[in-house]
Image 1 (spheres, rainbow, N blue to C red):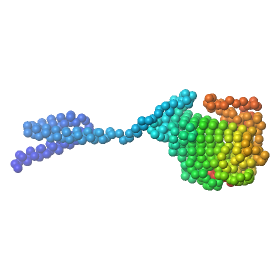
Image 2 (cartoon, rainbow, N blue to C red):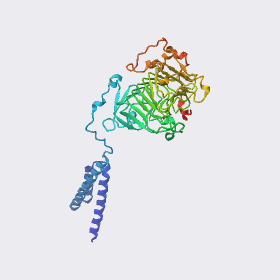
Image 3 (tube, one colour):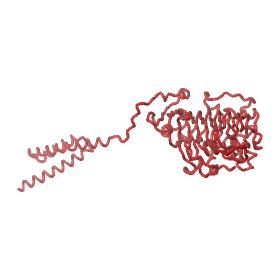
Image 4 (tube, rainbow, N blue to C red):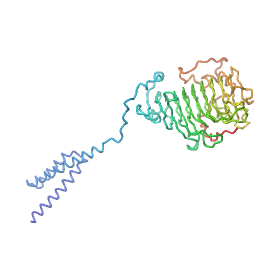
Length: 453
């Protein structure tokens, strides 16, 4: 090859490399066409020959087509969506989201939950998470029929939530944690509510852990923990065995609910009124005969620790059904306060009625009382001596919403009119000392609720 040919080949190679580098770099900094035009102009002026002009034109044309093709594919791949919403089923019926509760409560936001994809969310927890923090307006969450197998927490910043199911027999939230599996009884709840002004309608909360035997350690399994103030439950089901309902702290109202369990299945240190509820024991059978001591279940375990706490459980117009031999309550703490009024008691209620947690020092400080109850379990002739049978005046203030200051926060459409025959709406304060309840979490110490007869 001649010396001139060698020089031409070297210049051609250099131009090729330069053009390729400039075009590839142009992919990320500016439009391709302007870069290609500048490359062609610079290249031609450098060589000044027609042959070189044609070579550079052909070369840049090829490179431009290659880069455009590669750039398009790169761009297309980069912006491809990573998540696609599931296709909505064709048979979705939006009429089921119509709610009379919405007309009553006038929520600022309505969220829908459906496992099939017909709602905005597929789980209750996702809907709760979407509620605005500390909202002054009510949020209504409508949950379609089905069993939602999840553990739900309503934190303190998710205020003013209403959850509406389609009936407690058809809409359920279920989980199976126990004290052993979750690190403690209070952490085993299927749903835990810490928020202010929570309401639930027509839904059930279930803990499906196996039913323990008396004395089993770590088998406590909470279905519902309610620790927010001013909470109400209407037509709800609460299912479990040992420690079903942790009625933890605050003022609460339960109306037309079904509550099921075996041992201490309504416990905590709240101030709560239960109206027209079914209290169903699933404790094991103990055989025939009212034999004192053959106890394998207990309905309540109240945690009032001092006379300075304004807490207690009051049951009005309820019914006690089921199996086993159960106490109405036992003194989890020295000032435990429980009253049953006008309650239908089946024969599963033990004749002695109450238990002091095997600590006789609590007999003088607990307040275990009954008024005008009926059924074979209501026979008071063998009740423990420290329990009380109330007269109408003593019982009156335990029997309406004034007991939980409900006139300040329970919806008027849900309230039941009542007349206090004795005039004073707080006559119960002359029977037991009631003051402001502290806000500390006293249930944290609840670790051993095994039944010891």
